[in-house]
Image 1: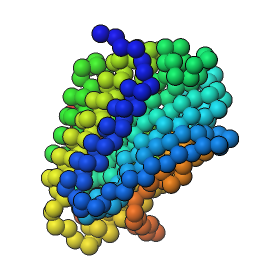
Image 2 (image 1 turned 30 degrees about the horizontal axis):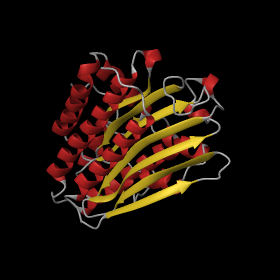
Image 3 (image 1 turned 30 degrees about the vertical axis):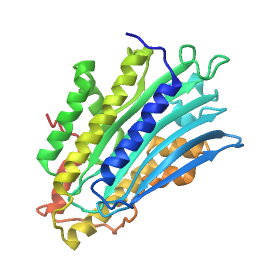
Length: 313
């Protein structure tokens, strides 16, 4: 049965997803590791809005965050209107949850997820999704330091399972978009081993509102289940200082991608968003080494074989 598109329903789902995610990871970490920061941004020439930044700094997750934001602006920034240039400069709303988790243990991969809704006002009522332009976006990806094939295959199996009810083409299409998007051009390598990425789910590309909204909920649930399973499997394993040093070195690549290419970071900064929340995706510690080249036969050198698109299934 078709439901009436409703901003509040989406907002309630996003807030519940954020809370559930944080509580799940706090259950295996230091109970006092979570910092909740509610914020409002108003009287700004570009942006008004509010959000909840949930920060984890504990014994399992060295630095992680699950941020909810709901912002409104008078002029849609260029970074959000690449596909629809005719909408640039129009009033807009954006809401979503963005998650980045940087574990302490280098044997546990970093992970990222995002689910979001954009609307652009084309009539008198900014909350009327039936008359305004809307689209959903999001996805998730995995960035291991010491990759384990079994985990990566599981990750992609879960991604495929998530997409299956929506068509045979959905997983391969969104996997390719993920491989293409999370790519560091200046390093000629992918950020990790991929997952799903989509940026334009609406009626114009064959997704009705209910279908698209259900899909992003499934994406969020799949990410939580899959990543939590991988973290629990490895977070108590012993590791060496050499492995920790390599993790910090590879985190530098994560920072490079977020500052140079990530559309969410660019959108947040272009639209006058809250800088502290935008940059919370950065790891607590990272390092750069000049012209570092690990031995190709070493565990560190083995990672290079994984930083190119691959058909995991």
